[in-house]
Image 1 (cartoon, one colour):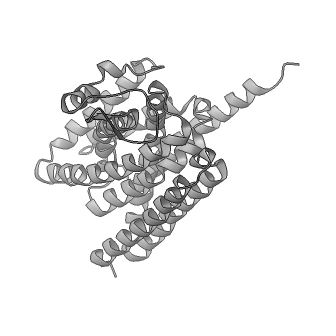
Image 2 (cartoon, helix red, strand yellow):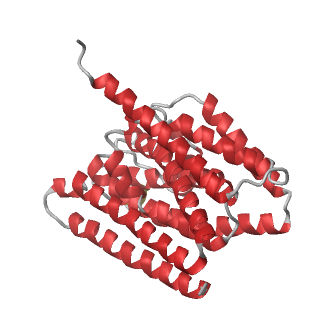
Length: 317
């Protein structure tokens, strides 16, 4: 069949209906009187994580039926790549909320807006990246070198325990627009005092998250463009991976430190994809092999992390 217009319509319906249900559920929770209901429970986060992954799986099946096994492999590889890189980004989210002293029960409001902003930001960046590669093929070497440099930067950078809010470039830009009140009194993005509108820690967190996601997109989009330059595959795999981030964040928030070997795994993936782009004219690596390498590295990283965590919690003999 390969009707790309119909696929775009189906994708839009998938995303639109799912977002309406997802955000509607959390809106109802916000109307509850009990403050604890603001906190998405672990079971609810688990259910929504399964729902988002299942939706991506169903859509992957539609791609297979309509576009064939090659496009299916590209979608799954892109989805797995984006999902794995975004898990590392969750450490940044946790760091932002901790630095601004934003309680767990208010974090979902920031993440909801952040995800919508991330989707709106990614789509034009993806089209720009695809256009550059189509008109300037040599850009593939630049993207590859950039991914290798990103991997090296991740390897040597120190782990931060707190963000210096005053020195953050996104917050300095925000302060030029309006005053900022870093004392969180209620779950609002803005508040008015003495007739002056102030930005609250929630909008500060949102600005930092969006700025961070922009930087993150500059890493992840070139990586997925090494798999495919089909805008439909790149956009759909990106969006499906992003949509499940909020539920995945609340699911993993308490155990993120246990993913000890995730970062080395992501560094290895970025190096693999970077060199794949750099050597594209010499060595043609099939998409299925790329998928196997990405999933293999992730599997080893997660397995080693699990074994390390299990070894540390075992009582001494």
